[in-house]
Length: 297
Image (cartoon, rainbow, N blue to C red; front, side):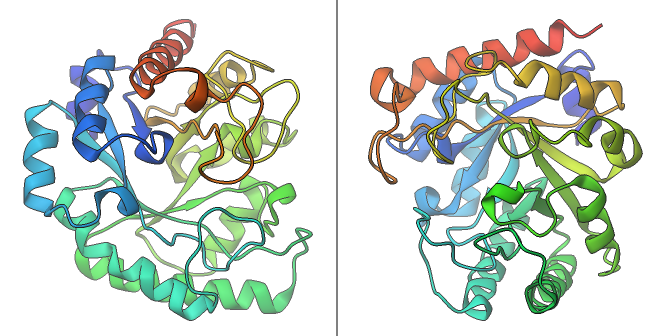
């Protein structure tokens, strides 16, 4: 499938967007606007697409000439985080069960991967109990996913977000301990833009990356739901994308534009969701990301 998408896209990285970026859109609007913006795919947020039969969703997506890059379960992190806008059961085992429930849907949509985030510590500390808990839960998720032919993408998160695997090297080491073949890593501009080890480590581990989520970071950062269009703010997205391309990455680039207007938590300054339509945001985001890829030499 990836080879076909690359061929259709002139051998350049295909572009998608996570539909968590468009909270006021319906699932049908997401498909229409993605196609109109020139995207190649969509990442399905289960909370929005809940109740939509997989065959109906697949037909609509295919008719628009799109692919499904990711499925984001309504509960996608193994532990609950204080202050997170994404609620769910507090018990990690129950949260893992919710993730497992999304696996058949990911299979039926032909998604490239199912997104999972590891357990986190409020201060980003690496504790043996948290590591063991995450390993046990993720091991079971991967085993079930393998039975369905589904690939699991584990998001590489920053230490400031409580991650005990904040670098590619540390994430690869952790995942290697599980010994599953259907598991890879999802990197993200927001989480890795200030990681001084990223450029060197991505050259070592590029084959482990299943997707790259892209946004930019505002000059004055107001938190995890404050992200701007690629090329805006600190303009770290071009360097992030070009480091991936330098390493030989030719997979999906997924726009993730969380820009809270108050629907998730506290509104951020100059919220994209408040200042423009989702349709305009997607059109500008896809065009900006495409220009970053086109500028690569």
